[in-house]
Each structure stands twice: as C-alpha cells, then as structure tokens.
Length: 118
Image (cartoon, rainbow, N blue to C red; front, side, top):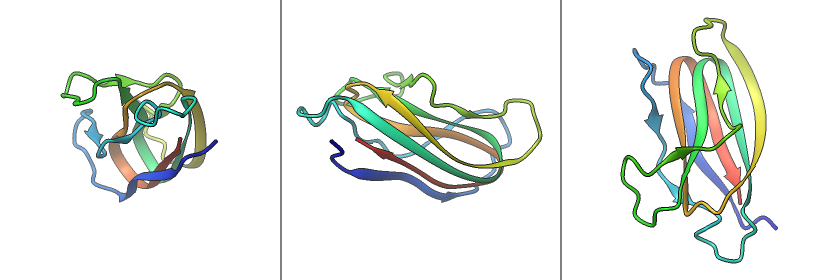
C-alpha cells in the first residue's frame, strides 16, 4: 500500500567540478511510518545526463553525516564515461529506513525529478 509520493529533487542542473556528491533534503521513510511494509519505489528522470544518482537511507532518528548508507541497486550513472544519456528509470527497494534522501553528482545535464513512493 502506497502511503504517499514524495519529490526529493526537481530541475537540478548545477554542475560539479569533482566527484563529490550533493544531497537532497531527507524525507520520511518506511521506518518512520510504523504500519508500512518497507517497500519503496524510486523514480529518476534525467536529461542529457553525465554523473551519478542513488538513494541513501538511515535508521537513525536524528542522522548525522556518517549515518547514511547507499541503498543497493539504486545507482544510475556513469563514472568515467563521458556519454550523456536521458532516462526515466524506476528502482524498487525494501527497508525500514527512518529517513531517505537522494545523493547526486552532476557533470552535465539535468535531473528533472527524483521521486519515491513508500
């Protein structure tokens, strides 16, 4: 059962000059909503994109910088490949994360949206 659809990012095109990640604001994950089974669907919409995007989650109620983990099989992007691509891609993941966020690095192009359902 989907509780809500949340938009983490929209219309981001700030180019990074290195390989560090920027982060969306955190939002409530399945662990925050005690009645949820932990199933999430993430959606990425990218245009002429070079870089990397992924979802991260935490079990911490009040997370610090080191409390976040990459959620397996949600990364999309190219490390050293300079070929731009456009995509509308979904990823399913399960976890009772209290908070989730998107991590991204834009070398070129635009992240039109990153959304997720829980």
